[in-house]
Image (cartoon, rainbow, N blue to C red; front, side, top):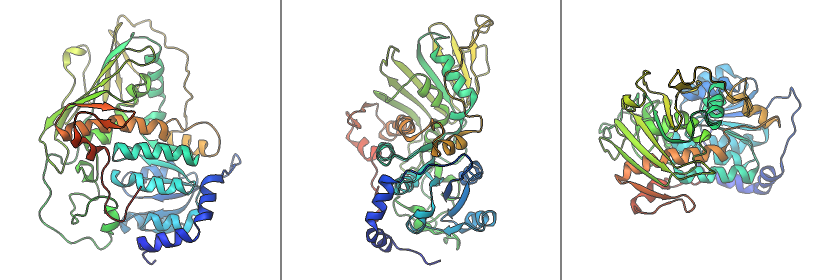
Length: 433
């Protein structure tokens, strides 16, 4: 397969630009109960495998990965699928055969891949965090609305019975008004707090390094980045907070309708220009909302945990959230149902009737059903962009080294000009959103 340059891609796109516009703006297929979607896969390795499994009930018609090793493994499973190393070429050549796209690339490529698909009228499932920057999150949410496509971010726990039950219980007022929340993760499980490697090993023969870099700044290949540890590097990933925040903070964000914070401050160490910290504690402040009081939310990673005295009767461990209410507390393991504290007070507690639709076949199938006009994808880009924005503002605060005050309407940190380059990053030449 010949490699398509950016210039060739744009030239061919312009030649049938009107037809693409019609596809993006007027294509609205109806699916029968048993009809399958034709899906294009962007990135097969890493989280790609899990996402492929999640949509394997449908027709996988095209597969793409910049690394020919996972691409080859996927080709063995789907021998009839078209194979590509450049997602732009895949969408350019196969857009008429694809209904929906699954994006499982590293964080720094989420936005450009998802946007390219939506502009062609394709439904999109994109891994978490939705984007690498706040600006990108806003743009994807706008695009999903503009192109009227069905979207879902891959924070799979959002579809779990436990999380949805937790939201219902917390909203019911079981523990009273909630003013304080503590969430933690066991990440990072990859290197952070380190400098860029100085050696320049050869690029593996199977890896298309320039395509892997995508919109990120130019730098030499190193195995410190690909295939897994990119998560800790600011140019490619979003650190422990970005990697797990859209999972762990989802319960609080949904149940308390948090929206954007008005201020964020962060501590952690070490501060490196290249990578996230080995540990951090982030403090978000949210204003009063729809009859709910202001909330202070704390995030802990890298071995840090909420103070034991907040819930001495339980084993406080990572990957969980503790809600402090006026009438009690709720300990919520990620994806699980809450333990209401103190236990004796809630021994006879009866939870409310379910109010949130359930997804018995899981997060991916919820999206597939929504693509076919059956139900709603509950972590669509409208919701996911706001969650991602909130999460990533923690990284902005850490990287600036200041407590930041945030004007969500203007998408602007009002007291630190340096924050702007983290809110909206600059793309490498040849790439745009």
